Length: 560
Image 1 (tube, rainbow, N blue to C red):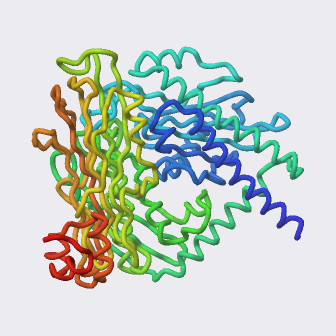
Image 2 (image 1 turned 45 degrees about the vertical axis):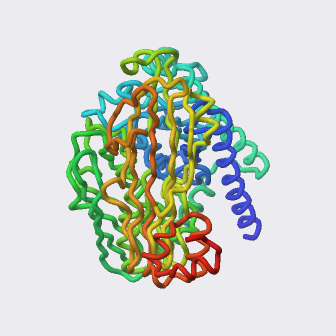
Image 3 (image 1 turned 90 degrees about the vertical axis):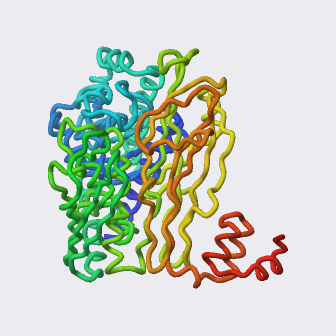
């Protein structure tokens, strides 16, 4: 028995190391900066029934949890019995993958002694897939780019050259697209090689016994954690901007002894523009919201995920049917953890954070010949990632410029300037953008940039929290709203495509997180430290935190 337990623990630890190496291989070999710099990816190992056993820590929940469901769809079309050594499958179908066309999922079977013993899967965000480009303006998925159904990328080691040529002919950056698909295949190969090496060292023939033990152990642990939460029904609702009219996201969370059911009945219907969310992406982020405060220490796999059941009415914005436009599904989908956490805060307030910026700010910048009137030179398209502030935590301030719930990183200024003719003139914390409170929300940031040659360019925007900022809690104040404007002072809408005229700059501010507790309960020492750091203004210190001018000037030497 001791030997069995030891082997199980060794195998489990090795699996975690293998999938992390898989993810790091993807990062090192990726062409798109969204993967290489921001970490917008997922990687994991699955049993032959399509059940996820382990995932890499590196990655984003929208990819990981959606990919966890998508591998089963691959096997429905291509059962394990049909797969052969050297086969590699792929898709970017939003309803079979991770929710929009820019995400390609690649699945590779692993063979040992001529038998398929496991599958590795990886997903990454490819910068361009043709069509209108990454943005919310399409009316149907057909306009958003090239959709590749589940099919072979490699068949017994031979590249599907016809498919690759079609992909390259339909995107604005064919070199990056091709390179990213090879990188996805390579990272799965790394996982397969390391898995076979592990099985040699541990003298394993299959993964079936260990895989079943992983799933059962995780499921039992998750059910035990759920049983500690008071059973009941907890509701919450959130209003967000939408494309050109507000959206309502409603949730009912039902907790029993062994399951958490999340039901989004009452949410807004499917929209005319590309902010709709396929159910897989809704399930991915809603289950992540639950896992943030219930069973967060339990490994994320089929066993633990099966204890969270997520549904949304078909035809709603959170269960958009084919062929709805879904390119910017993250603008709505990444709000769902906050919606779920708001419901759970009514039963476990000591664990749940306040609302934050949630949605990433992902401007798509395009320029060069043919992109807009007056543009010239070599065409380019980049998709930098920017983050806002998280909401206040139960007993701590929120985190500034931090991606929650996606977990990706801000794209470095230097990378944007190297990969495109764009100059970043300013990047700094947005003063007063964190919601005031005993515990403050995290700050957003301000970026100012322009075409390096002062030429016109296109900006496609998918920004939330412009009209409806993150709400505070328990007397805390709302976070600062996001906005985007030209250097002339003209404010642009949060959604849609605009032209940046010749010689003008774009200024973007990401939203801040909501605060918790009354501002007058924040200690004077913290208020003065915030003021000194530039997190809050002198005006906020006086009028919101009730600091006197004498306290400010005498203790920190500020001039009046």
